[in-house]
Length: 352
Ligand SMILES: NC(=O)c1ccc[n+]([C@@H]2O[C@H](COP(=O)([O-])OP(=O)(O)OC[C@H]3O[C@@H](n4cnc5c(N)ncnc54)[C@H](O)[C@@H]3O)[C@@H](O)[C@H]2O)c1
Image 1: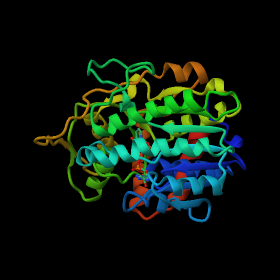
Image 2: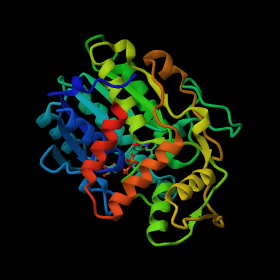
Image 3: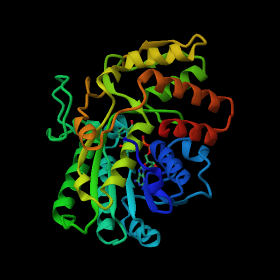
Image 4: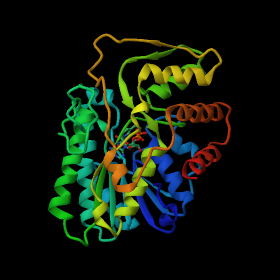
């Protein structure tokens, strides 16, 4: 099942983290649907940044503010009076979390507390979606696919801060949002996303695109690490679907995994191989182990049975198709082409 984008027409939506990779795609989907979108985030985290390329200027309100700044965030809620809130603002990089664990916890944990405090004090809010990650689970590395009721205890500071963000949300739901007329709040634990317009450091697909642009061999740090990779539009559609369904029917609110089917949980090396084959033009990759690299999970799989049972949801694009989209988008970008048009083409194809 796909979200009903008509539902969003004319609705006031607040997206935190709108200047990021997923945020920019989500805002493009929402403004195209006719929603009145406001965003709250720091400046774009990369240069270039998809937010700057996505043609969103003038089509949504953008507030540049820190999620740790409760006063500013509250003012934004008061001014925008959102009905639906998507919380994506985060420090989302595992390696950065080893470099600066304190900032990671402050942003990802107190950021969630601040957001939910604003939800508590803003009666217009009816539906809230907190974006966490597949890394929230206690990972015994046995390769079993995690279910929603499995223990939450991510290993590194990023993963663990997102486990904490989950726990904070669970407590707020029980303590403050239990009444039938209070906002419906869900969390979604999504797998690694790939897609055009990701310029982050230390992520596989952006590393691939940078390498082919510079005609270099792609270095893959952990080629055997298995991740539930999926196209960026997959989890965004899940966020939109849950936020829509739980609005007015709290029965749908809950904690959901969102990831690909098993056949698309690939080792990073295989993904790099698919990318090289699709890109052609002599693209090649090699394993590039780093000495004293910080711990990163070897295997991560998600059981998405709940999402399928509750919503009749199915992933739409297999990995080969995802890689084709990434390569096509990246060529448009490298050729100085029309990025908003390319985004709309992909969104239209996905939602068709
Ligand atoms: N990219 C993935 O593979 C992936 C997978 C699972 C979950 N997620 C989650 O999805 C969300 C978005 O990830 P992304 O890949 O778009 O990351 P990104 O780095 O591209 O975007 C992060 C956003 O958060 C904002 N931000 C960071 N610190 C902030 C602060 N202190 N105050 C306000 N805003 C702040 C940034 O300005 C940016 O808008 C994150 O919550 C991330 O944990 C991402």
